[in-house]
Length: 220
Image 1 (cartoon, rainbow, N blue to C red):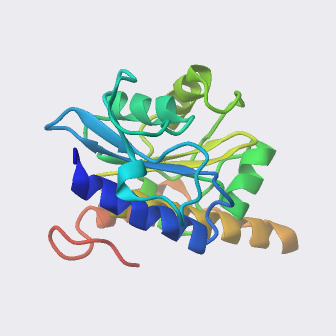
Image 2 (tube, rainbow, N blue to C red; image 1 turned 45 degrees about the horizontal axis):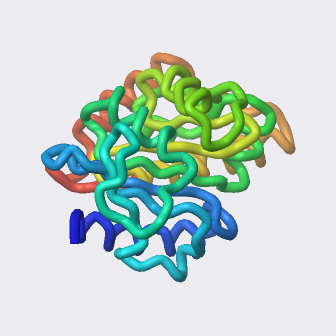
């Protein structure tokens, strides 16, 4: 089977986004890019994550040519490929509809530095891309444009997209951004959040560069 290991990981993490309520039903999609092969493994369209098998995962190139699959790829395949084309250091993309992040996407407002964990995205503010119909090239183009140097971007009236050096990193970033979004929402409900200033966040971003064990994952 082509990209067998990648397909197994996507099956595993697909269940996790449902179990941890980062997306509901069959919504949301995940992918892994194998740069050596020039191929992307992506979850299929409209299937329950609890029913997907490795054989259901679609393998395709970045020009929408299916290489190995009996299924249709996620309708958001263009959203994934545009990130791999424009961010050559990333190897995984996670697109979900978590409640608090999506609330700010509905408001068309960015996530701000209410907590230093936002620095996991590599920036001090996670932007919100303008609304476009799901599953369109226009959405993909606006998302990568709005994302800039960030590893996360909100999609207006839609959800959240994160990317990373591997699937674990991209998934962990999704969880961190949802954590920040919940803190921002809850603090706004009782007052005006104090946003960490540029100097504060510069120090955090610098410290994140050497945080944790060499080659290991972050934990705050």
